[in-house]
Every structure is written in C-alpha cells, then in structure tokens.
Image (cartoon, rainbow, N blue to C red; front, side):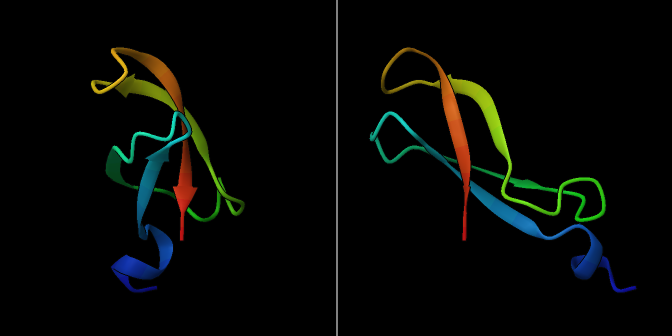
Length: 54
C-alpha cells in the first residue's frame, strides 16, 4: 500500500465553534470511522473535543 492510503492526513476541527484545527495522520485499519480526540483549544483556553473533518 502507498503511504497516504493507509495513514491519510486528516484535519481535526474544534467542536467549540472557534474554527481552530489540528492536522494529524490516522491509521485507517484501526480507525475506519471519523475520529474524535480531546485536545487543547487555545482560543477557548480549555480542552474540547476535536472531530475529523473531510
């Protein structure tokens, strides 16, 4: 498999509505659905859920 087929680059957008994003890679075999990670949003100043955006 090619590199970008198995571990694609995904954008994680804040659910707080600030528009802040993180860019990361995910393993498609382990996480075939959209992922949700709890990360720090500096605009709000606290940890919030970040959802994968396509």
